Amino acid sequence: MTSRPTDVVVVGAGIIGCAVACELARRGASVQLVDERQAGMGATQASAGMLAPYKEASAGSPLLDFAVRSLDLFDDFVTRASSDSGVAVPYRRTGTIDVALQEGAMGKLRATAALLASRGVAAEIVDGHTARGEEPHLTADVIGGLLIPAHGFVAAGDLTRALATSARRHGTQVIEGGRVVRIAPAGGDMLVATERGTLTGNAVVLAAGSWSGQIDIAGLVARVPVRPVRGQLLRLGWNGAALRRVTWSDRCYLVPWDDGTLLVGATAEDAGFDERATAAGVRDLLEAACDVVPHAWAAGFLGARVGLRPATPDDLPIIGASHVLPNLFYATGHYRSGILLAPLTAQLVADAMLDGRIDPALAALRPQRFGDV
Ligand SMILES: Cc1cc2nc3c(=O)[nH]c(=O)nc-3n(C[C@H](O)[C@H](O)[C@H](O)COP(=O)(O)OP(=O)(O)OC[C@H]3O[C@@H](n4cnc5c(N)ncnc54)[C@H](O)[C@@H]3O)c2cc1C
Image (cartoon, rainbow, N blue to C red; front, side):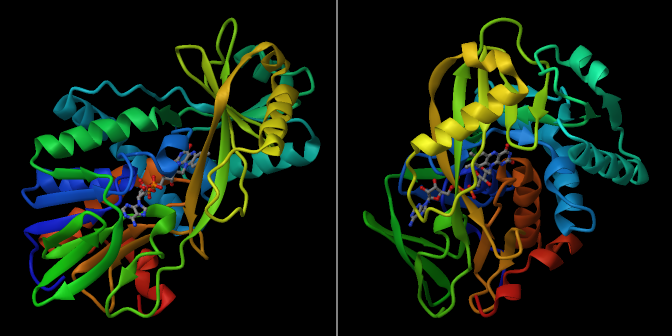
């Protein structure tokens, strides 16, 4: 950043763009948030909203510490988004259970438990009998499981709506239906050309998820290497007593909502920018769910949601200023964890842009690891 920006254009209103816009506006910046669709209709609308850093991150990955820090911010993040906006945001910290149906899977759970114990994280290995006591709908084939009480889930769509509303209440102009075609520096300003006119700011945050490498940027030859990984997720109408917590097997996860909806996720497919559900995806997820919770065969089928996760070559997000255009900031590539990582991403982007404070955690996430972008 050349100097503290006062006018920021945020491109992309998924959870990341909305969280960043909200934080910048709350700290006094004048913000325009632009999306080609309605806010939250990219990958974010498909998300299961799980907040489970100890599941997705592996030992030694910088993502684990980043995700754990972000989870620590979640109580305040949800409370503030909800109270600033008046939008209710369902949010639960009821933990997770990861179940094993064979000894090989059980060995992996024991290794995860040992890793968590070395970090002082509460986690408990249970046998099949205890696992079924915790979750009576589990199949009798379950031989054991791993309980992690710190995990939780949030309604990602409601949270994004709350962030967008709260950004508006802090003065952000939210522009929906404005596809950005080009970003270009002009004097000390940054011009953001959309199909409906040009926006001007003195800094830009590129938070366009899977599409972040598709936008023309004057003066840049290379693009951030973000690619779409399609995820399909089912919504089932569960009958009877709900599961108590997020439940994983090695083929799917199940997220129980108070209204009786059970989310079943998720596929991971290289399908380009195709956002359609497929018969194969729906069948695979239904079979995987019924293998672990046979009562799911009796559930109603409410629909399938599809989103394109923004993946990067090293599975880490890209957060930081462009090497070439210092007034262009990236906040993208959050792949499987964008909901979980939103609070810390927003905080560190605002710290860097408005206060020039670069958190050490951003060193591993710098855009420059992918060249002159
Ligand atoms: C099935 C599934 C389940 C998931 N489950 C979880 C989970 O349990 N927990 C978790 O933490 N994460 C989960 N994720 C990942 C999470 O959803 C993503 O990491 C997150 O939504 C990425 O947010 P984003 O704002 O970067 O991208 P998006 O939500 O995709 O937002 C990008 C926005 O940019 C806009 N845009 C693109 N191009 C342009 C343009 N040229 N001009 C203007 N606007 C543009 C798009 O319209 C879109 O709204 C899941 C994802 C999927 C698909």
